[in-house]
View (spheres, rainbow, N blue to C red):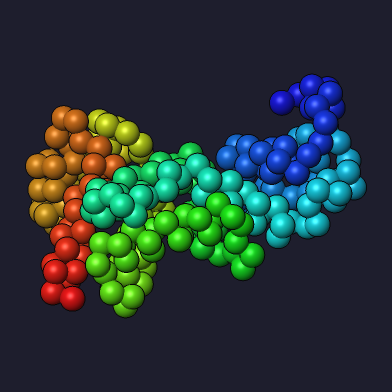
Length: 220
């Protein structure tokens, strides 16, 4: 947003945080400082301190804004469907805000949206009959998988359906010696097939985890 247009809009805590999210989305979390934020809003750094005390408070706020974008699981719904819906919603939020992958669980002063999200997730698992211990295990396992997949997905040098060939074909030229037969096999028989999208692997892994949790919950 041009500085002149920004100056016509009144400052508020919500607007400061919205602009911080936009700056992090565009330039990465390392580029987010009080100074760069003020510059992007067409104001002076001292003006922002009325709404946020420091960068930590900004990080607390923007993490909470990401959580607010994620639809809450419903404790009275089917737990497996709710965990699938939640997992896909979290992954989508992290694709919109890749800087948040390492931050969602890092804050020592979580905001209300963050707390509502955790409470709804725990309530859904407990309502399904999961013990306290299995609920804790399930939540840790699911988030480790979702965040890990999001991190790997963000790091790939290609994105979307039928884009892997742009990277894979030049690498395949180095495999003519026959030294890497299994890498050739997985590329030819899977990655280079029409319609391949690495993102499709997410549902496969998620279903494996939910299958395992279903068995544990039945035996609990």
